[in-house]
Length: 167
Image (cartoon, rainbow, N blue to C red; front, side, top):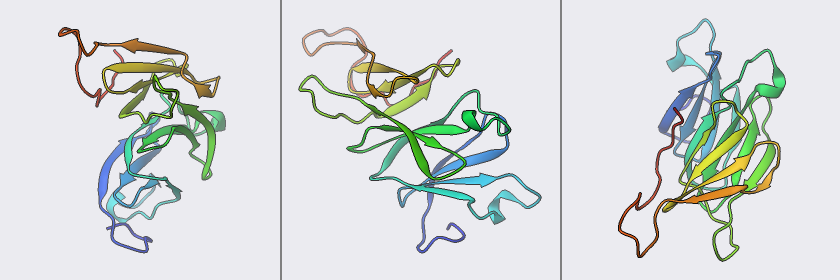
């Protein structure tokens, strides 16, 4: 249960900020909450920041070069059902940019998983049988798409790309 929430909400996952200054939590009620590290235990903290999502949140990721003393780097991305990818400001509840993945019918498609490149210049998004890439400095449509297999082809990665990580 979250302190300060109007109803009971369980967490779906937490990710520490790259600089360790705060933790970002995804919750069942569709709200992303940021907890800042202080003198008290994490279990006793109240969220200092909340962002409501339109739908169920599939995945989220911190900007990899985030440093809490550099405001421009304090952001994270989310992907949710029937919504584009949003780049959120982690200091105030506002969307900085929106990235719209489009399918082959030129309709909005939602990503199942998302990740930043290690340089923070690109966003990788996992879909069914493909990975789409976005330039962080150019909000809007994807810049490239890599098809991992086709319906007729038996080789390659089939199904949903549910987790992404860059090595």
